[in-house]
Every structure is written in structure tokens, then in C-alpha cells.
Length: 206
Image (cartoon, rainbow, N blue to C red; front, side):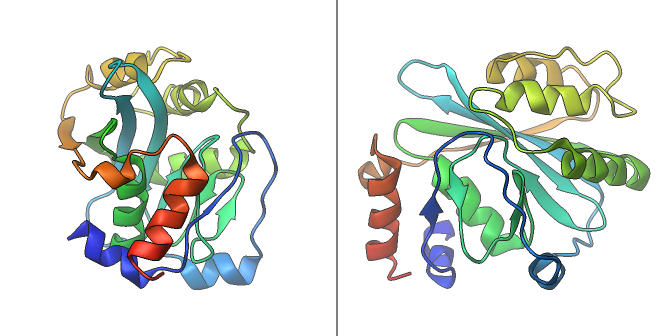
């Protein structure tokens, strides 16, 4: 189902990891904003290499007055998804599915850990990621754990540079649920992100 939804977005564009500032115009951000009407929550996204079992990337889904993804030093880009310094706006169900599918490949699985929080905590998380600024390469886990340690309900969260360490840390808190996403499509298994983006564009006629 996630594969079919890909066809509703324009081609994904890739950018090199790094701390390059990106600032979408106000009009684009406001137009794309997805107002999630479910319970407020924070979800840690951990991408794990299935060959080495090492942590490859961390992201954070925040569902408050709107749903955004904090994707520090990430390579996921789309012209339909406005970005401000690693914060992705307009994360409706289709966009979120595309984001997760982008990371789940034959050599990578995705772990989602969700924790329901109060509306105030969700809004605080939105403010913190919006004010954080662009994140340098290899600082994804460090930046996310630095955000989490400031939130009520995550007291004592240990900051780390390692995605699997903050995944284990996140699991310590009460009420956390876990979901795993796997992808057995061999065509997703590209070591070149640009080639992967081109495959998606051609396969789904984006």
C-alpha cells in the first residue's frame, strides 16, 4: 500500500547530508501544514542496517497541533514537502508513508517507537525542533536526544551520538509502543541515493 501512495507525490530529490540551512517560505509552510487530529505523540524513528545491525539514522515524528518530522542531517527531500532546517512540514499520511518507505530497504529496516504525550509537551517539542537549526552530518542521534532530554516525561534521557543507543534509551520510558517496517524489494537496495531516487521516479511515474 505504501508503494502505491508514492505515485501521489512529485519526484523525490536528494541533498547531501550536512548543516546547509534550508528555509521554506511562510506561504509554503502554512499551505502544507497537516493538522493531525489524533492524540499528541512523539515517535522516534531508527533506521538499522540489516547486514551489520548497526544504527544508520534517527528521525523524530512529532504529532501536535500539526505533524512534522525532524530529520536531522537526512537525505530525504521532496518538492511537495516544505523544509526548514531539517524540519519537514506537511506530513500527511501519504507524505509520512513515503518518508518511511524511503528509509526501509532490503538492507535497512525501520523501528518506530511511539509515546503518547500531553498537548503541551508536543507543542514544546515542535518549538524545540523548529528553533534547533540545521544539523551536521553524523549528528542526527545527538540532536534528537538533546531535544528529548528537555521534554517533560523524558527526564534523564541520555544524550548519545548512536541511533541504537537512543532507541534503547527511548524504550525505557513507560507507554512506549514499537513497530517495525521491513522492505524486501531488491530494487530499493542501492548504495547510491541518487540512483534510488531515480528508480522511485521511474517506477512510480512521479
